[in-house]
Every structure is written in C-alpha cells, then in structure tokens.
Length: 360
Image (cartoon, rainbow, N blue to C red):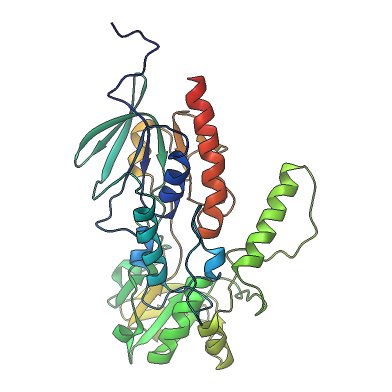
C-alpha cells in the first residue's frame, strides 16, 4: 500500500512551460538534478520567439556572450553579431544536443491548484506536477499604447512582433514608434525604403560605439552584486534598453535617418495630428513599443496582479509556492529575458527548486 510520503507516479516533479531560451536553460539545469521533468512548447518548431523576429534582426552581443549553459554558440567567421537565423539554428541544435524532454506543439490553456501539486490543462490533455516553471516570455503579448482615434485610423498598423522586412512599406509614409533597440533597427532599414519618421517619447539614448551587450551585462551584474551586498557601485547608467550601435544603426545614424520626433497627439482617419495642431497624412505605423508578460494561463491560480505580473521572491510565486517564473524581465532575475542573462537566472532558480523538492 502506498503511504502518503511516497510520491504519486501520476505527478511529474517539474513541468516547464515554454521551449524558448529560458525554458531550454531551465531544462539543462533540471536534467542534472534527477528531477522528473518535461518542457511543453506551443511552437511548431524550435527557436521560441526568435522565429518571429524580423528578417534582419541581430543580437547586440557576440556569439560568445550569447550562449546557453553547457555549449557556447558557434562563432561564424566575419560575423560580429549573430543574426536571427543564427540564434534559431543554435537553439535547434542545443535541444537536440542535450536531448531535452520537449513536447511540441502543446499549448497550455490553464493551471489550477490540486492536492499535492498543480494541474496543467493543455490542448493535448491534462498533466500534473509538484512544481511548474512558467517561461512563456512576452512575444505573444505585444503592447500598443492607446491614442485618441487609433481605432479609426484607416492605414496599416503593425507591431514589431509581426514586422518582417521593409519591402512592404516601400514608397509609403511611415511612422516608426518606439525608442529602443527594435525601434532603431527597424527605423534604420525602413528609412531606406519609405518616407519614414521616428517617433519616441524622449530623445533616444545611443550607447558609445564600443559598448555592446558584453559591457551592458557586466554593468548589470555589478549592480546586482552590489545590491545583494548592500552597497552602491559607481558605474555608467547605460542599460540593456539603451540603443546599441550595431553596424546598420551606425550607418543610419551617419546618414541622418535616426532623428526622432516627440509623439503625435491623436490619429485621424488618414493620418495623425502633431502637438502643434498640424495634421499629417500617414500610410502605416510600426509599433516598436514592447511587450507584456504572457501570463493568461496563470490567471486561474489568482496570482496575476493588477500590473500584469506575478509577485515573486527569488523567482518563486509568493501566492503559490509551487509556481516559479523566469525569463520575463528583471523582476524574474537580472537580465533573465536575454540570452546572455538567462543562464544565471536558470541556475539559481533550479537550485531553489531542487531545495524545495527535497524539503517537500
């Protein structure tokens, strides 16, 4: 007869939701613990959100600084910054190299608490685990700010999540809205094909040409260590959201294409109205305005707060201690939404999961 102290064979130890870079990093560390786990990925193919990046997308760190645990991203001669396809190829080879326990396509619909663990409802049936790691990222929740009249605008509106290349905008009057790296990279190439205007809430901050993801991650690491030790660090403020001058951005800046305007005040049917009251006809708007965490599957647990996040301590949900989150941003681990930062976040989280499993 099974006693209450024996594990229920119907329960896995851990279910990881999401097979992008965060899910793979978590799985790599989990395979070293002996915990029984599986990774459920909604995608048809490997690569996570990188499969949805635009054609010319590049990282802003070299491959040696853009690697998951255990196996560095292979370098390509003459390539300073890996392309979108380089990353997809790497993630595909990575999960094959380590034979990670992925199941796809499996879409997670909801998670509910049950006695002894969590129940994960999917479009392929129901699974149960003692703990769940949510690593669904943000790509499926693009954010577009509300503007008066936006719904009545007759032109094209496209979020950077769905942008592919500038050809569709050739000869058109285009606004590229958003002052981060995606806005700068997309504006750099759209401005070659279209009459494009860059719209940002503040003056864009370009990092020095010799600063890329390596320097930014080291700065973030120094600040994180200082915070853990209760001290301050005297270092430049530049962070992962500032614009890295990859070659295409430098070229656009040199030809004067990366000059921004402050936001318009409203849409009308054929265009926008600027703060001085002037109406301007516009054919299309590309929104490079970021994303929000994709956490709808967690709502049945009652853990999603009014701000759209989950309250966590060291990556563990405060309201539901069987739930862990990683890869959504700094609130789930410093730089954890980047390839360069996800390794540390996954290592620390899995160590805590192992400790929690041992004390259960």
